[in-house]
Amino acid sequence: MTWKKYAVSVLIFSGIGLVFLFLLQLLQGFLPGNPQGLSGVKWDLSFNTASSFVTNTNWQAYSGESTLSYLTQALGLTVQNFVSAATGIAVLFALIRGFIKVKTNGLGSFWVDMTRIVIHILIPLNLVIALCLVGGGVIQNLKGAKTVSLVEPIAVSADGEFLENAEIDLEAGTVTVDGKVVEDAEIVTEQFVPMDPAASQVAIKQTGTNGGGYMGVNSACCYEKS
Image (cartoon, rainbow, N blue to C red; front, side, top):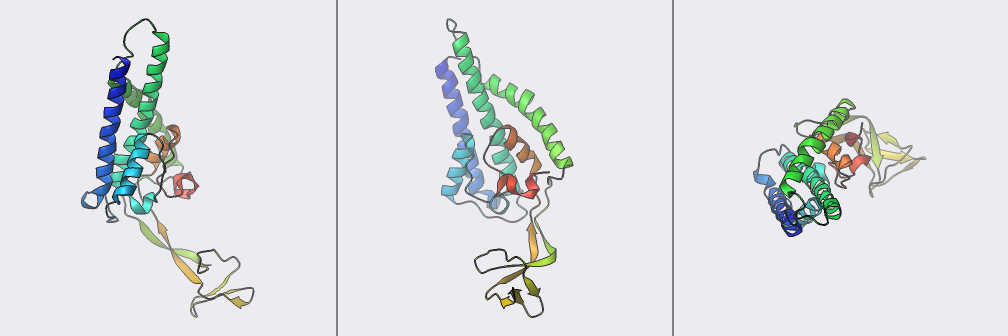
């Protein structure tokens, strides 16, 4: 390919990925792989997410565990984590060839470069990393999210701030801190526990240097790291 054909191939491939991911988010409420019954993502957030993942920017303005279905995360975001990283590597290879082969025509084939990078480098590498993450405790399943009871209840203020050293009376429904009753305090006795195929996306997120994580707080979440 000449540099023009190579550039056009990159743009066409990225454009198809943009449209596919955009529509996948909009229609996820009607598609399988959605055990929590999440509705479709709003068009502006869908476009923002699709454009950022296709360009390997992966800027995240959503909480993955409560916004995107398993199908959208796996078929949409995880796939883009692979191919957007591969696209960047392929363009770098083409740039290097351009400097080396100054007096020759052609920079190679974008499609061949993309295929080789994904199959021979990214998939084997991230398969090993994903297995290591699963072995270390990162979740990887297709079960629906769970709500579990806490071993001990906690209390938060009306602003959502965790109250330390709080004395909780479950029967009376009161929360006391330093002998004073905290008005409008909320007693939390249950926790939302996501269940999803996270390890497979966390692996490529790290190796592809992508910003988008499976959970809303990315790797700060205990379910994304071993």
